[in-house]
Length: 321
Image 1 (cartoon, rainbow, N blue to C red):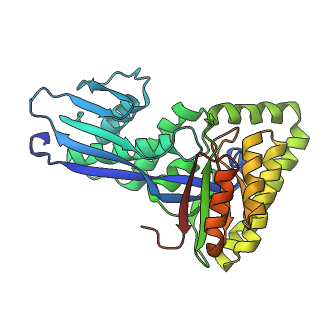
Image 2 (spheres, rainbow, N blue to C red; image 1 turned 120 degrees about the horizontal axis):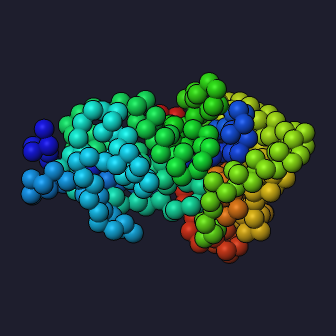
Image 3 (cartoon, rainbow, N blue to C red; image 1 turned 45 degrees about the horizontal axis):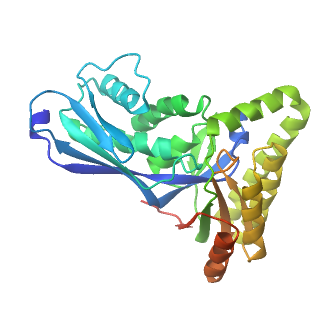
């Protein structure tokens, strides 16, 4: 099967959580959107020698080979992805070299780990000349997310695999959102790594130590998400912005913000953003600002002046991909 493999390329996008991070782990809803301008690419090229080895490489990755029999104890996320794929699809690792090229900042709440896994899964399917339906890829990425985050909500893998704005709960899965009017997000990178696993574990400890108080905060976040869905679908970005800012304040109560995140949130709002908040695990990483289109340049400059390392943009609208 693999002897006729042609060069091919797969990809997957970044994502941001608009509202609901951390609370989504405990069954409350969250809203997430893809960032299609930031992507991971996985390029497939056939190997010249018939040695039946899969090779994976890329920037920041040492070239390494994955033998035809992948260890059950694979403790590397890429090797684990290969093992899950080969078991799920009942195929051997293909005799190709896959080069990973990620444009998504690592440890920033943008779903870089899930995007790499999704792109690699798609590349393995191309190399094996088989179809990998999105629902199976979603299951695969979720299993690898457990290695990255311990207790993932499932939202990262879902929005990245399907590349659509979603309303998500762990119990009911996802609904694709209708976007009433397109809106602009600016995503500002603090330059500080955010370890989602650590932040999620800290919120769990906080909930165990102060269950009543913490549950009230998580429930309040869930209420904001429900209101935000209505604002998105009715096309009310100003209302959505105010809900995002409220969500940030509640995340501060969960101790997952940081000084630099708070500085960037304040700077964006002072420059005219309708709302702003941290996105993802917190304690660094990225914040997002909902910005009127005519104030994009002003808010972008304010974020850089406040210490942002990089600022990305994405427009959220219905019918993405």
